[in-house]
Image (tube, rainbow, N blue to C red; front, side, top):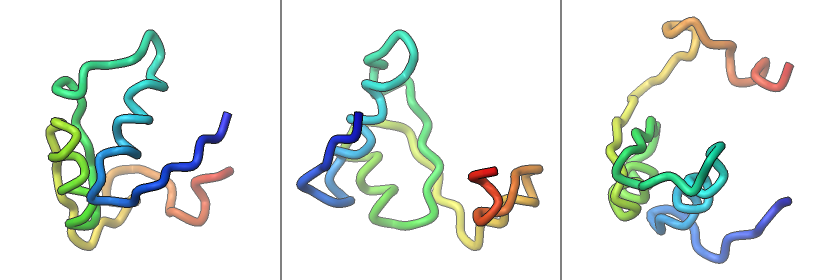
Length: 73
C-alpha cells in the first residue's frame, strides 16, 4: 500500500510511517538508527525521536553495497 505524505523533510512523517512498517511494528522510534545523506533528513529523524548519522559524500561501494542505480536489481 502506498500512502502519500503531505509534508516533506524535515517533517518526521516519512520516518514515522517507515517505523510502522517494520516486521512486528510499529517500532519505538527511540530504537531506530537513521542513516541520512542530507541535513533535512537528519532533522526529520531528530524530529521523529530517532538516532541519526549524516553521511557526506556517501559511496555505497565503500560499505559493500550496490551502487544506487543498481540497487533495484
